[in-house]
Image 1 (cartoon, rainbow, N blue to C red):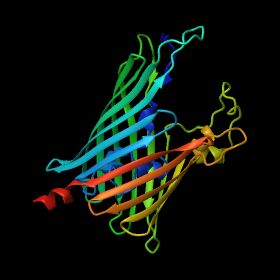
Image 2 (tube, helix red, strand yellow; image 1 turned 45 degrees about the vertical axis):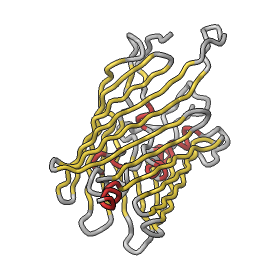
Image 3 (cartoon, rainbow, N blue to C red; image 1 turned 120 degrees about the horizontal axis):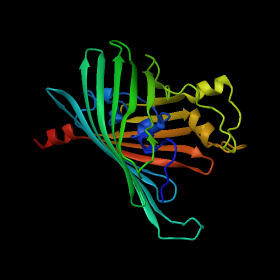
Image 4 (tube, one colour; image 1 turned 180 degrees about the horizontal axis):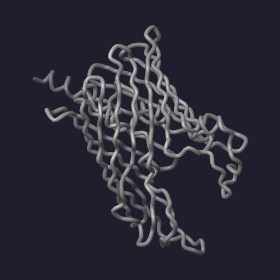
Length: 319
């Protein structure tokens, strides 16, 4: 039984990285181009580099939890368009009543459907996404209508992209139960991606959760987070760092670090690889295979596998 409560943040699945590349670069990248499906992170990245790209991704977590994504981009005279679907299956869970006795098992799942549009003016690009999100658990369901809006600047002569995005602005159309107050995971991000001219590396720096200056506020109910963190630690919690080793157009290695994830999910005396991620890209003709391994907890990590298909090349060959 759901009971009315004070406003609580919900729909956290909207914060999940939608592509293996985004996950590998710290989980919050919004300026990393080129890259199939990266416009799911920031609709302003929906440009000529994304057109005709079909992106499939699958991520498996602990137990039976799994996430699937599909996205496709197309260009018209009215600009670039993209459509995407993200689905999270939380698996089957055992139910219990108020006394702790087992009841019937139940399932939970979330999904979000996204329609994006972007236009480019020379070195500037602007885009927006309309999203419908739905979350269900044990027969209860909530829904929300949301908007993402972002922009980018691409340097005319250097490999440098700067951008911003405001994510998950919207309203709930339905709560799990009458009288329940929910809050969407609104987020503001700023990002920068650049490649030094004579280096085989591309760097990405992203500021996350900028709408919330203090990410390390003490929580009396927490077992570990009882003291205010130092200023440097709080600043680092707002940063996601990523780099790519560009061995060639067809082989790339990736690595990232997210300090916020490390601080939130580490144990009191053990951190392990929490907050770190590693990835690989292999491109063969019209196909692009991506794999990322990210660590959230000392107990282990999660993997995401992606397949990018250049539909333009495939159809061109058949003509």
